[in-house]
Picture 1 (cartoon, one colour):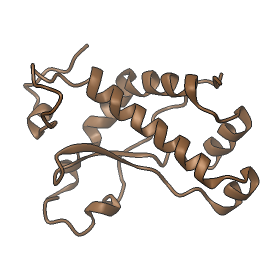
Picture 2: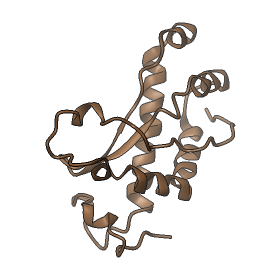
Picture 3: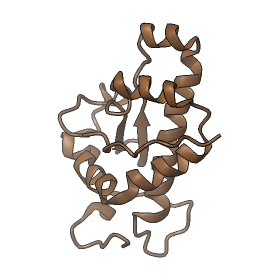
Picture 4: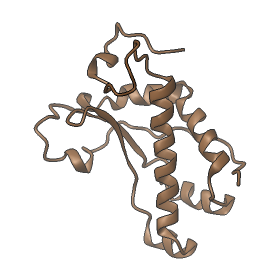
Amino acid sequence: MSLGVEVPDPPDLTNRSLPIGLEDSDAVGSESDLHREDLEGLLRDDAWEEAFEEWAEHTDLTEEDYLAVRSAGLLDALDFYWDPVAEELCFEVPNVPGDLAESTENEGRLRGELEALSETVLDVLEDGYVDWGGASSDDTWSDELFDDDVPLED
């Protein structure tokens, strides 16, 4: 099934609280350690559009379900960040509100689709928007990749 909708704006990753898994971590010295601002820039530089279109080609959401998810603000609530503890890109998906879960009769399906979209975003970021500098796919995405001197792929 393919979802034929307009690509929404990427989520605003600024002014967010620490991700749940990092709330008690000493490894996060400041918000900048999460590189949300850098990631938001990459999303605005077409990574979000590319990922969304790829996801929309394969999603099982109906247009009605998608519009309900979007109007509930769930796309805007998706969070992407660099985890300095695990040294990897991560995401958090918001909880599906009870009224939306009841009206669609399947909270797990909606959450699963939001997770699939988020995984697609991470794949697109890792595959096309970060200059791995010849590193193997087993290497982690280090903070060095966010330095101003390291070019991003066009």
